[in-house]
Image (tube, rainbow, N blue to C red; front, side):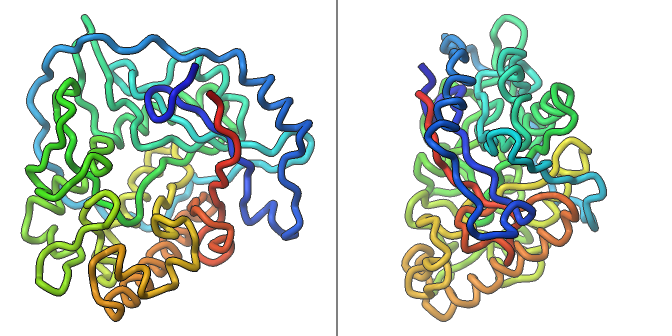
Length: 337
């Protein structure tokens, strides 16, 4: 039995990229195709649960802003064909080895898909010798996991599932400590404690970094209504460049072909919500005027990132985004338990 969101979880989704959407009538999976997909994957069983974990070492030094990059020269999208079931995989494994890699049994399944997106929890409970926890930044786990996918299937496209809006924090170095660490964001909820992400260590620690975060009418850092995470201020060119560079730095590994654009269509996953200043204002706790400016900058950031990815993918969440600022969308269709 495979549980979501514990490790590992799997769900399949149909590919929707600019290449295969030249006609808006491209079919979704038929019932027969779904049955075939389920039969193909049903042999996979989840790994045993992680037992007691000892305390890990010290936190690495906080990173600075990402180095600037221009354009991805190695990114490529999936090869689309109706000869096989047009389904890709969105997945991750939390209980990994010390490098944050997928297990060989995982790769037997993953290698069958033309497009693989890796979620934010990859390597979140990594362990080394004797079962001791190993701290991994999420980008390190993503890169090592993506390299394994490429070795298993050199033709696969690999996308890492970044977030275009939320600055995740709240995690602890010791994975056995499940409380929310509010050192950098005193308002953070459990939903904001996802992954070991570098941005918070820069954005929420330094005066310069905090200049890239959205503020509300009282001058305090704005918080998103679901997670209480802080939010990138995409009204600012520097914030848009910061996010784009984070994505391009991932692709500079040569094994990542693009980035997920989580919250591209807000929490509702509807582009119409993104285009509603009143909705965005409620979600971010700002005025409708600020919300409209923020949404405009958010869209521009995604357009700039997609262009910089070249032949790679920026994967949004709603079909209405396709062809504007995203050249692929994640359509969650089948959950396998």
